Length: 197
Image 1 (cartoon, helix red, strand yellow):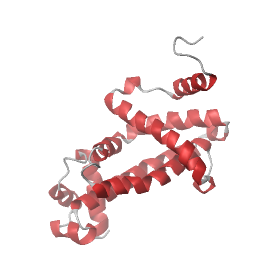
Image 2 (spheres, rainbow, N blue to C red; image 1 turned 90 degrees about the vertical axis):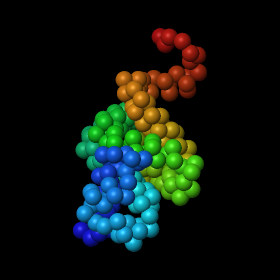
Image 3 (tube, rainbow, N blue to C red; image 1 turned 180 degrees about the vertical axis):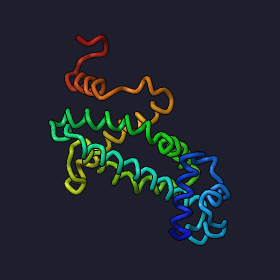
Image 4 (cartoon, rainbow, N blue to C red; image 1 turned 180 degrees about the horizontal axis):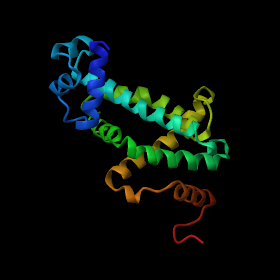
């Protein structure tokens, strides 16, 4: 590996171990074996390197989800079955990748003061929505049209974002797939709040 790759690997390691806010340039240098000047040379700034490390780590989570679902026979079932499988797998893999999601939450809180970070998240959103539709529908991302990505993808992104926050605060209160499916059915059926039958 060259210095650029070493820096990225070191930044990802620091991000997962120390989080977004507590990682310093010196931490990255120590983790990567590179020198301080190489951060500026290869990435322009520590912040730019951290952005790349965060999105690379999030990509690792997405790849893990895709591999997991590809190995699961239930992905070939109906849409409700695929949703249940996808949500269950997402919850399981959140636990495995919780450091990534903690770092992402920290980073999201910085977008007000970091326009480049905001832009990076904004650029990643369409691809993320498209990937979530593909995940929950068991199709290739290239099959997801713009309208579907905008509507269903936004819905799934909202669910996943809420799951991340709830898992970070109190994992025991995070709804499982069956609870979410029951809630969606009640909304679509127009069932008023109160005990269900």
